[in-house]
Length: 637
Ligand code: MIC
Ligand code: SF4
Image (cartoon, rainbow, N blue to C red; front, side, top):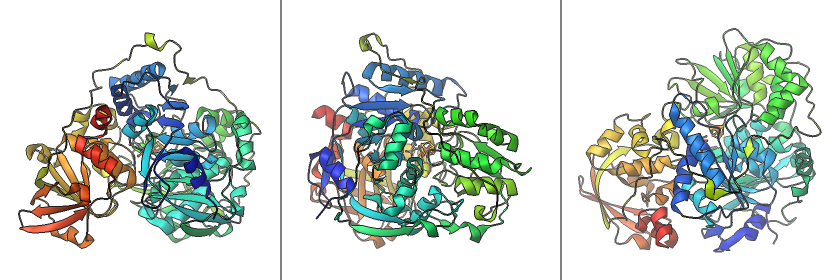
């Protein structure tokens, strides 16, 4: 029985455990990436590990999220990140260079290697044939210190692609089709591996759009083979020497199989407020729109912006609509300028923003009240745009551009514009905004600012947890609900006491006060708790507020790891129906003396009832929890 490509790479990197269903494995991490919104915390933790240089083959620190500098705070973070990078052997990508995932694909991703990133869309680099996984900052810091990365052996789902995409249908529609089938939790603890004759009809950036948004299915990562197209892409980036051919074995066995005929894909959209809420564009055609935002790590490659430029070439954006464009990198901008296509975007009336995350993370460009905004991004969670009443539809660049001209949602296949996409043979390579680490690290002083507060220290786990249920929430609660982002809150990422005031702000603005007043307690949740981002602030800040355990029907992978890393116990209802037995405000006692057996009884003191819960934690995770989190655990080791 042969191996899938994912299994081959995992086997080559295996340090601990066996690749077997439900087993925990530890793999060697070759490369890491961080971005500024999770990076400051990751490096504060890395500093505590007292390692003099990173132990990876390559580590890169990108600045792309908090580039709106309304005061000293974001700028201080950037300065801190630059100094840490210089000292510890990390490449530093300056603000203005581009979005981390787009840049990593262009300049650093290598087929067959492993990449761990403190951002949930790290799987973007799976488009080039690497195992690229998103994780909390502390896990990334540990990998930089040379620790293996531990996770549950993923099941491998094969997505077999046939055919080729019709005109004006693109990679975004492919991943929306995958989401239509799997929804936002269909691939938790799975790797999506793409194979089949359709693969050769997709360029590397198109593959990367698909692996990027695979994150929204809950997948651990997604991967494409490394073939001749990969070779051409690397050659065009002047990195051909890094290419190796990589394919699954002919007789590879998969846990699950899906088939997609690219020729049958239609333009799709994810409707508010979930990337899994997918409908055909022709079913929603004609809905008037107010804003169109093009960009983000999903759809900001040269190919995508060329399509938009070609659509805009002889047209004008509708008078009632604002269009913003955030290119993925300087390389993309340079090419658009060189080809003259930047002029088409400007002439049509688009607002050209910085090449950064921007509106995708609520850093400006919030829509107006009740607005409908069409975005080429990957997430449309409630409130993430900065306007709670706005409705965000996630679409392809083709749908976004054609709809912007028409002022309403439009199926792009209906237009007969002449569109010519000429991709350059070689890309303009200019790495002068990537600063290599210092040769004299001992002379580098780490520069901090008043908003960069040390990570609070937390105590080892108590034997009995007492407290009230401070909040009961439903299914698919995202980290954007738990720890919102946006222009007001993101600058507080280096300051846990300050950011913790905003925990659950979108759901219950009084939450943090109640938690502090009650000296902590519990959260009860439905399925897929903590989906979305990798931000560990969604664990650290609740921990700071005294949250001791989260009792849920199920958890999203990265968030569950983050809870453990910061000493919050993730418990799962043995019988999902028992979710109904716990109400907000009730008082619980949880004895952890049976914790190691995997079963824990919760006493609902208000109702005088017992509820059985379980956890799927291995002995390592149990020890981390008992130590009060991963940092004290590593220090004790
Ligand atoms: C996101 O898209 O939600 C982010 C912002 O990129 C996050 C990371 C963060 O919260 O800093 C992610 O996806 O991990
Ligand atoms: Fe940035 Fe948006 Fe991509 Fe997150 S999803 S990395 S915020 S562009």
